[in-house]
Length: 386
Image (cartoon, rainbow, N blue to C red; front, side, top):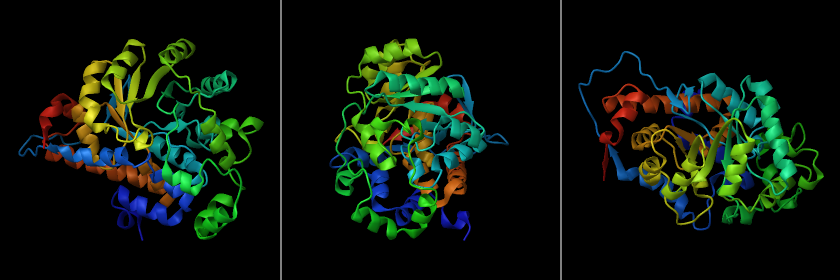
């Protein structure tokens, strides 16, 4: 069956990914903090905004879905956000997503927790990724990460600031993700029930996180490294940390994990190039606000010149259109691309990008628009709160 018939939307990829992945990894992708209230709000709050349908508008012959974010053009207003351990969902999953993103002309953000490292991604995808930086408790480790970024030509990093306090994701507690550091009988049984995944992933030996491979303090193998990477996150992040990184890093600096207008204003004053409005996909603060509900207020706090990206809960092209109307410049999507690569590899990721682009295009046209620039100019006029 062709990808067109098998997958019509994000949820189709999600269902297929859950059938293919061992429970420990499927739940890691899907899960949220504690009661998962924030996780649910990230989806339900899109329904509080309705789109105005406009007819008989003079549309351009060709739709223009391109945007410019902090001076850098992108062919589409969305792209793959950073997802840890993508290479555990499919062998070389990070490479597959990076290749599809490069082919589509959109940015790809590589996580510190990615299986494949910066050089491997650059060589395999023919494009330099952006880099999501998690700060380690050891300054030498952080310096090594930044040096790797400089060596590979990275010009934009995303400092993640919302994980210094580690929340509880009950699905991970139940499955042992980040607490088991070796194969157990339970894991062996999970893997045995997923022969397609097992054959694909284990044919070259169990993967390791390339950026910390060979460092004994992080352990050997991705299971051990996952727990150690999490436990070693710098728990003393402050605005002084942002200021120091701004001094140390000459490229573009985005702060990822801001979800409050007051924090957005402080980030603006710190001289950063942009922020990612994010609640970490509902994986940190339970009973928090959805990101879509905060876009307009955060844009007002940032002012017009600081780039505003947003993530958490985006599944449809209409979600992306609403975000841009509310003041965002770009949408990062994490889980959808993890599901797509787990379900169908690089071809699945490329198909997902095409599906979402078509959804954005049709939604724009039915709202009487034919470009993302026209959408951003129209702003909240195309929305109604319901």
